[in-house]
Length: 301
Ligand SMILES: NC(=O)c1ccc[n+]([C@@H]2O[C@H](COP(=O)([O-])OP(=O)(O)OC[C@H]3O[C@@H](n4cnc5c(N)ncnc54)[C@H](O)[C@@H]3O)[C@@H](O)[C@H]2O)c1
Ligand SMILES: *[C@@H]1O[C@H](CO)[C@@H](O)[C@H](O)[C@H]1NC(C)=O
Ligand SMILES: *[C@@H]1O[C@H](CO)[C@@H](O)[C@H](O)[C@H]1NC(C)=O
Image (tube, rainbow, N blue to C red; front, side, top):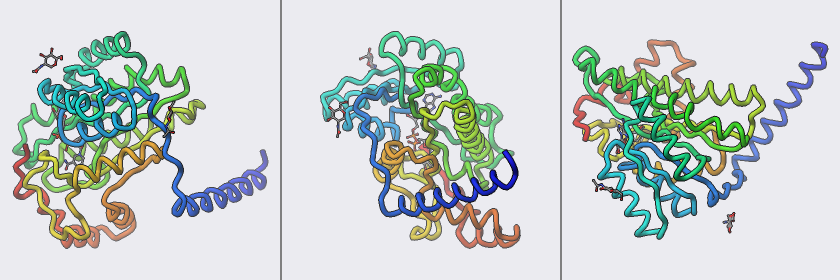
């Protein structure tokens, strides 16, 4: 195609997509019906994993729950049975162990069938200054928060590609978009998770597999216990999120096939400023927003 024609086409389509995005501000896309879906959640035994499992069960989806913690996982299944009368399939799996992921994934395919919505949610945090973090915990963070996502895709994506239907959800973090003092290994692992999910979405698109969707979730602190003691300086601008709110936003975003979900909304502004402002001004603003002391009183679970 010649240069002029192609450029004109891009300009025209840019206009169309801008208009579409503008209209979408007022009329959001319809939420898809997930009643026929098989949803697999890692880290389903507590926190927002459990809440998302309950929400998808309420919407009529079949649930496959994975956690390293058998007690917590069973409790989630019991809650689903009690509130929605539905059976959830539970599997005890350490998703940082590649062999175990492949083994349990085969078991799921035999016992339940193909997964259509995969939610990589399991996560851990060290919460110490980097030089004081034990090597084993640093390695574990990378294994659970990022490497596990590779193995889960390897296990469950082929069936989605074959059917050109499915949805990949990455529960990353705003710490996967901006570095944070006191969270170096966690940030590294979450940046990796974001980069992986984003690249895979492009790889799928480039191979014409447009029926497999991706949603990348980057929340600020959520009040689940995982980050107990972490503090925010101006809760009006950077509130610690309620788990129920975060869960509702994520499930809605999946049903609307939204690709990026940042919360609270001030994260969108923080990202723009980080990339736009002179570096010293960015640091100044970060300090003003209390970003240097987020982890000062961290206790965790
Ligand atoms: N809580 C927050 O402030 C916050 C903020 C942003 C992002 N996130 C992310 O949200 C996700 C859920 O966090 P949460 O707040 O519900 O925490 P949580 O600790 O309540 O839940 C995490 C779950 O993952 C499970 N898990 C841990 N390691 C595992 C492993 N190796 N294999 C299988 N399961 C494992 C745990 O047993 C637990 O049930 C995490 O990925 C976390 O990084 C949390
Ligand atoms: C979703 O689809 C199922 C059948 O696939 C149907 O029974 C149900 O009524 C639908 N729900 C909504 C809210 O449209
Ligand atoms: C969890 O549930 C399974 C299956 O129902 C059961 O076999 C197992 O003993 C339970 N584990 C715990 C720790 O309660």
